[in-house]
Amino acid sequence: MSERVLYESSNGDVWALTRDPRTKTPIVKHQRNISSGGQVPYTDIGQFLRSGAGGAERQQLLKLIDTLLDGREKALRPTICLPHGALRRR
Image (cartoon, rainbow, N blue to C red):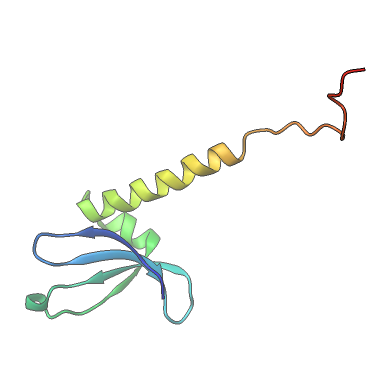
């Protein structure tokens, strides 16, 4: 399963964007540090964005989403398609 690390805290917690092992939908995985028990909860992206008041892990996900929008904006710029040879000098 591929994943993209969003944020690593100083206490060893790691948040990553990954896919749900069952549904294959995008989710946020929180790998807790050993002293916190090391559990790995998965959170729906919408719920994750609504819950964190402004934590660094939430900000990193928003930055990642922003880069996707920037790339899409460039990809959606209008393209002019001319028939083959239309620009040839006569």
